[in-house]
Amino acid sequence: MPTDGMFSEQPTTEPAPGRPRFLVLGLLAITDGRETVVLTPSRPASLLAALLLHPGSVVSTGFLQRVVWGSSPPAGGKSALHTCVLRLRRLFAKYGVADHAIEAVPGGYRLHADADTLDLLHFRDLLARSYAEDDPEAALRLARAALALWKEPLLGNVHSDELHRDQVPRLAEERLLAVERVFDGELRVGRHRELIAEAREAVRVHPGHEGLSALLIEAMYRSGRRGEALAEYRRIHSHLAGELGVEPGAVLRRLQLAVLRGDPSGGPPVLPPAGTPPAVGGAPAPDHAGAAGTASGALVLRSLVDAGLLQEGPADRYRVHDLLRLFVKAAGTHLTAPAPHDPTDLRTSAVG
Picture 1 (cartoon, rainbow, N blue to C red):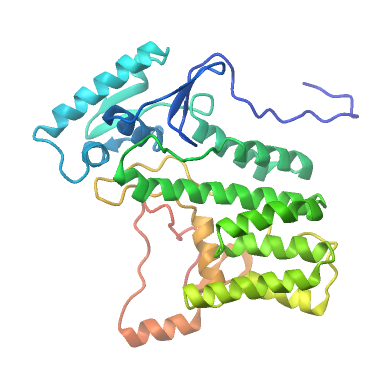
Picture 2: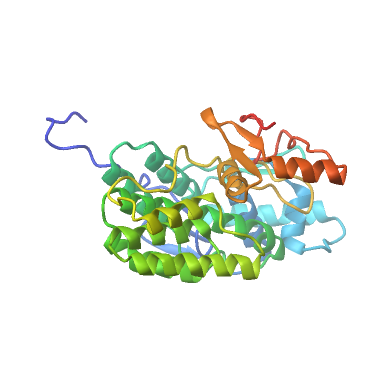
């Protein structure tokens, strides 16, 4: 829609109305925008959750059997799985979901969904648009809208050890990326004082998360609470040393130095810019116990840099830290590139 130059068009954050929509960012449910039906714990519900966590991807029958029955699937597991799919299709018909939403393909099943029919894809779409948005206020609104889609308990009505061991933690990591994006956005629009209480609570829930702690420290410092900022650095330093035996990463160390020196705090956040959104969608579930990851390659790279294992150079190029090279040489081991399907594949950056 054209504008007259005085008003900017507001970003749309709601999916198209009138279509049944699946919800996985909380209790597993189906909604039409007016009424929401929370599914009761059952084998078909576990099957549906597994398919929804890999939208558009072929999910292997072996993985689905482990999701539904654990480590002891019944004899004739494929036939029993097919029965679960038929029960799901009957459920879909009841709530107006297309019968062909679940597709049987060689080796498994695939569920078709988009940002209008699955809250997980809607979340990822909003967060990607937030990263791409140039206007800080609009970017923050999009990130807030993405974060608002999350509810607790995450898949609490899905009784599957496989999903809660491997998939739910990956979902939780995606949520933390959105939290960081929101807090970074608040700093960029100058609402550092208003951010402190929310950031304190996030750090309380995730006491070892360096990114959240860094954002809290920066919010405190910008608000003139230098002593509290240094106290938070000491807390995260003590936690990391005591729980993991490691030192804070480079971002936190630089931030502590800036606070100690009293560097000006009115510029953009000390944290590196968010850059491009993490690639988290579309990875198929492999046919082994560790189902396909959706972890962000960008998050892994940053963690390796912060841990001192990689050194960051210009143009998004990385090199292995000299100390790690010496350790590898002494141990007689070899560094190998990740498999092509690995979502943390570093081959787009030079690691040498």
